[in-house]
Image (tube, rainbow over all chains, first blue to last red; front, side, top):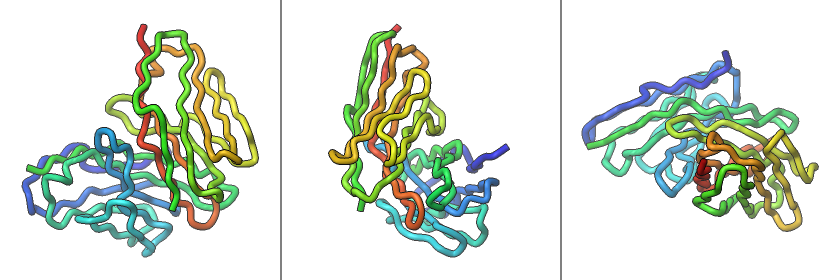
Amino acid sequence: EAQVTQNPRYLITVTGKKLTVTCSQNMNHEYMSWYRQDPGLGLRQIYYSMNVEVTDKGDVPEGYKVSRKEKRNFPLILESPSPNQTSLYFCASSLLGRLASTEAFFGQGTRLTVV
Amino acid sequence: GENVEQHPSTLSVQEGDSAVIKCTYSDSASNYFPWYKQELGKRPQLIIDIRSNVGEKKDQRIAVTLNKTAKHFSLHITETQPEDSAVYFCAASITGGSYIPTFGRGTSLIVHP
């Protein structure tokens, strides 16, 4: 089954304790992206990747890191989480290419609380 | 970069009425406009999309229209049902090359039985 898998689904952590949210897709998609969703603000892009070893900042990259060592995985790293990073996070992937269907497939979401 | 404005932020209708959600975009190079539906507690999922070479697309009770000149596109839901209640997101992007989708802020649609 084609899917994007995020882990964990829920996480409560303390300020300053490094954490990683994993994202994996099995559709051989070139493009992967991380979003955070906050009430009234919609989906805001944190980082994205066009392919292996190619990553770039989105609209709200401060306090986050990513890596793309393999095509299928795109982890989100919070080196020193702060309470303002409490949010619902989504990973998404899609194909690139002019004729490709560019539908974005989203993971299940990760509800992060930083206390 | 691209900027997508979505209105209204909240839309409340009675079951059976029609609902219209509108989006405008700024980058005339954008050529792909998907709409996503996010039910409570779930992930966004694509419900319909339209490319810039088409003016309108329908899928049962859902339709999307695109006006390239005015740079706006709309989602139309007819004969709304309670299960249509969700947050709807529009997006704009460019297929091929630098594909970076920009999402609108979302519309919370509430369908009252």
